[in-house]
Length: 296
Ligand code: HEM
Ligand SMILES: CC(C)=CCC/C(C)=C/CC/C(C)=C/COP(=O)(O)OP(=O)(O)O
Image (cartoon, rainbow, N blue to C red):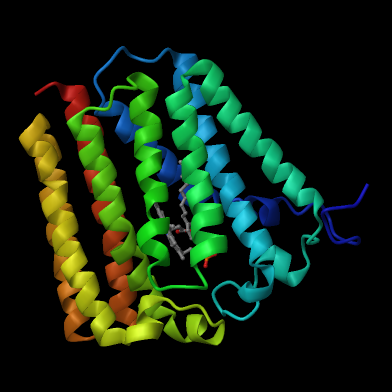
């Protein structure tokens, strides 16, 4: 049986956890739980809530592991990713990993289908498919629009949670899915400005590589305005003041940092804008969950 780890190493638990990109998976799962919270319909049992949480987390993890397995050669060309275990050899780049990834995906989607419903299982699958195949394999090295379509992965996470409670999607879950679709490009393009040289060296046509930092920063600013406008839509369809505070504070912060990035499109302001995107998303998702629970 081929080994998945370098021969003379102790069990590389940290490397294995790193391959599954679990920090991002936790936020993706939080996104699905926000979709659940704003969806009308019967409450889930504790078991169903556990299955939803684990199926989104594990499918996100399997997609993240596939991404690192598939990109082990190009990751070597970028400083940010060159220390990853499939690049350094800490984990052997063996096809057995594809079996592990497929098994995780089957377990995640199957459990969601059995414990929740077919719609939720479909969106769990689509989230991983859009990230691992549509974005990573089909678009990433072909077009700067890679993140525009790949960003749907986050929207499917919202809908995986929303349909778990009610396959009849309401306006608020759809609005939240639109927020994730509009959030992902400025989130990623900020990072792509900070690491433009990396992407250029790896031959990846990210927006800043194609149009330059200034035009990319202008695009980030305009897309952040569209994102923040969309993030206010749930206020028109039932979410209240708690959500409003989160969306307005987070939106103001992201717009402010995106504007600063247009004034000075350097690595430092790009990373500040990237982190602002994470704060804005957290405030929007937290506001949605707290507002939906409060019944104000
Ligand atoms: C195809 C869509 C996406 C792309 C291409 C993308 C891109 C990235 C990249 C390149 C990083 C830096 C990763 C690293 O250096 O290890 C990152 C970090 C992050 N992304 Fe995204 N992202 C996407 C969607 C999402 C979504 C949907 C969420 C959450 C709902 C999200 C949440 C995060 C978080 C929390 C981090 C920081 C993780 C950490 O601190 O290690 N991303 N993203
Ligand atoms: C419902 C469900 C399972 C949804 C999945 C959503 C998901 C996993 C989105 C991708 C997030 C991410 C880390 C992208 C980075 O890819 P990259 O290749 O640009 O990053 P890298 O350069 O750091 O490898």
